[in-house]
Each structure stands twice: as C-alpha cells, then as structure tokens.
Length: 227
Image (cartoon, rainbow, N blue to C red):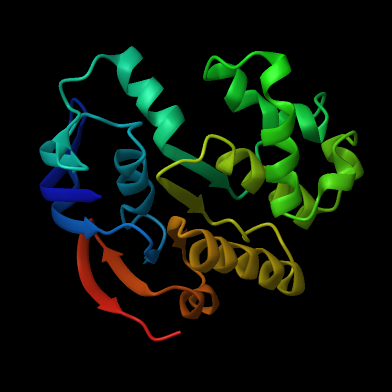
C-alpha cells in the first residue's frame, strides 16, 4: 500500500539546515497494525505528516498503491487525504459546539455528501465504537474515552485506506487506554483496518503486529511482533 523510498527531509533556516528524516525506507502492507515509537524530537511527527499527505516537501519517493502523488495539485491531494487517511489525535480535536453526530458527519459533508445521505453511515460508525446512544450529546458531556471513540468514528467515516493514530491514549487513564487500544485492535483484526500508531508508550506496542523504532530521524529497528 505504502512505499517510502530513500526519504530525506530537511528544515532550513537562515543559520542552519536540520536533517530531520534520514534515508527512510518503509513498506506498509494492507491490514498491518504498526507501532511507530521514538523519543520526543525523533522525527515521528514529521514522518506521519508525510505519510498522511500533509507534508510534501521532501527528497525521495512516496508511492501510494504504486502511484507517486507528488505531482498532484493541492486540491487533488487534499481530496485524496480526505478519502484515504483517517486521523486520530491525542486531544480528540472535536468541535465543541457540534453534537457527536455532527462531528462524525463532517468529513462526509467535505466529501460532497448531502445531509440526506449521511445518516446511515454516521450511525453505523457510532455503533462500531459503541456510542450510537450518544449521537445527540456534545463532546463536553462525554468522558475522555468516549470523546476518543467519537474521534475514531469520525476517522473511519470515509472508509479510509489507513488510520494514523497519533498518541491516541496520551490524554487517557490506564483503563480507558486499554479500551481504546482494544477497539483499535478489533478494527484491525475484524475489519482489516490498516493502522499506524504513533506512541512513546512501550505498553501500547504489544497491541501491534510490527514495531518501527525511530531515533534522530532514522529507522533503527523494524521488526514483526507476535500478539
């Protein structure tokens, strides 16, 4: 599905050039659940911005399903991003004034669906994360774990090819973290969702089928995991 070939990324300022990704070679197959681990400043965020089609200023080649998207226009790229990748963030990134239903519905509306076409999809997504009964609530009426479930439903709504979960349990207690990780594992095993999980928490690694360790902008380990 994804091939990164000799990727290098630099940040340039007037004083210096920072080499933030160093000769990254990475292959992601459909249905994998991969942990990307590394300390703060290791290049994890830069790597996921690149994987999620947010950052396109790099050297090397990014092939998605065999096609290079580097020459795509910004409009085409944002359409591909909206249809191809779902994002789950540490801070949930929900719109406080919108209901749970409206938060989950939003990516469909961006994708050109009319309001009359969205109900079945939204309710299916909420059912999948166990929150069909919370559709009319607002985020502040929910627990942290429930808010993260809403964020996962929103990430799934366009049936993306892969999910990027960036520290998805970082703001949650241990018990709630386990619930969220078990939900992600179910999505991976039962629905075949491809998940790239970015974390600095070693306790999340055993939930995954592969571990990629990154340090100082380079992949220092890439191994299969038994789970």
